[in-house]
Length: 145
Image 1 (spheres, one colour):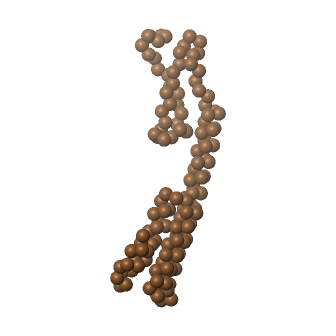
Image 2 (cartoon, one colour; image 1 turned 90 degrees about the vertical axis):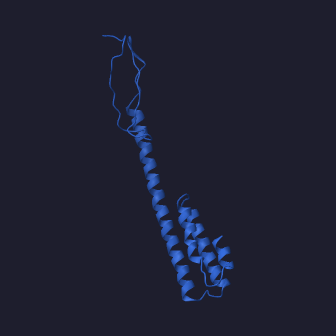
Image 3 (cartoon, one colour; image 1 turned 60 degrees about the horizontal axis):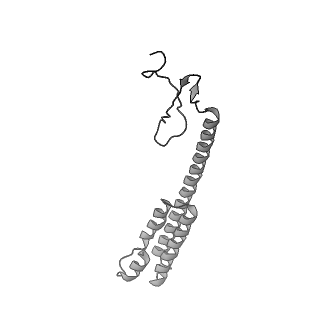
């Protein structure tokens, strides 16, 4: 859309540098491949704008294309790092949950005549691992009251 608008505004207004918005926004919701593709498309669009106005060989357009390409590569790099960290966190979470389920067996419903109930309260809303404590309490009408 930026490219189309840039072709129709007066020649002294240059919107091509705004093309960096496309890979930056894409990185917020997509992975490195799609972000790289959008960055490549933005560089192609900037090149087309320079070609359309006959300024492709000017220093200004060449610097804009190089800057856009460099920023796109940097954004893709950060996407790769973010995805790697996310995969590591998913793996750690998976191993921790498996270990918790193996080591902490659920309490039985009864121990002899004593009925048992339990409630799991995680330290955080989304947490499913760590911070396990068991406590007992007496209730009215229970043994020993």
